[in-house]
Amino acid sequence: WAVPRQGAVPSLSTMDILLFVLGYYVHFFASLLLMYKINKQKSIFGLSVDTQIIFFLASLSRCVWVLDTRLVETVFAYIELCVSTVVAVVLCYLCHKFYFTTTTHARMELRFYILIPIALALAFLFHPGDAWVSMQVLVAFTMYAECLALIPQLYLMRHMHEVEPLTSHYVGLLIIARAVRMVFWGVLFWMGEHFFQLFFADLLHTILTVDYMYLWCKKLRVGGQLVYNM
Image (tube, helix red, strand yellow):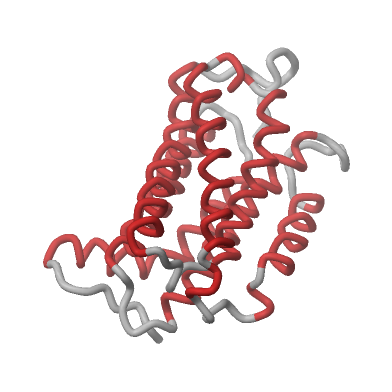
């Protein structure tokens, strides 16, 4: 989704832009929670390094295409992008620093060096517009990468006896962030803007996480440990 400041694509209201950015702010607060967990426990046990690398690459992609959108007219978007990119860098550094604390990783086909090329391929094949090389490809790459990024983390949690509380809240907030963006796509559809390729990425993300979201909400309501294993 790259809305030009001038051109054939109708402009979005400031409220719509804030709704889009809100999802990333939720993601940002989830990342802060994860930073707190790692610094407190001095460990990344139960966390997927691949997930953090993919999120970092998606943030770098956003740093490029956001300049071609109306997001540059909103100071909240600038602030969010800056702090989110910094946090993504810090999380990757912490994963590197405490890499020795974990020996558990996702299967080879779920590692970042497999998922990133898949996201790129999907972005080239399915993106808004007709041009093969455009900012829209980067936008689509960001959406597909963010969708695929959570798969390694979900895989690890499914193979653990129980999910650590802060990790469970981190993943829950990530899912909420995508749910907010689903609302954004719904608003765009109501306004006559149909970005089905990008909507599908968040829809797939929602489908992959619906069972986890149910268990997380149940945990918040009744307490206890979150068991997400196979």
